[in-house]
Length: 112
Length: 117
Image: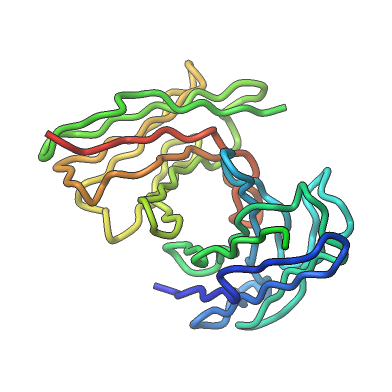
């Protein structure tokens, strides 16, 4: 299985400051069709996960533009330009290129 | 807005069968892939498998011999059966709709299933 490795696992951030989460895969996530199936999810406390970004960098509807996704191959990043209180939660990357699709361990974002 | 709701027993005895149903509302089950995901305490999220509305399935090889996902389009529901459960199957189970990019665009609220005698 493709192993997804996130860092850091814990991310204390001051309100209004930027945050960045790295996600690395054990194999290239470029599929034979040329597309890269890398997605990001947010899980707020007490809630189920919510899709934030799909196809590496496309926002889901309703996701604030302070979130951005980037990367290619095996190296991907989720950035928050200015952290707000509602961003507290756990963030997961997930690859949808190689079956079984797999998730990262999760990065817990908290306010400092 | 599409909504999903898991239902089923919260407690299952070891060696028995775990059965959950996901009811889809606010949209049709037709034309989409539907999935089951789980998260054991302290572990990462895990894809169990998925089913196409017409019935084709794909299962995680780690569970393949024990899992069955089925669909009932007339009821806008799909279901999970996991046989011969052990304590390692204790987890929160989520149902979700699979998006065009093999992502999970809509999730249920999740249901905790505990395997214990």
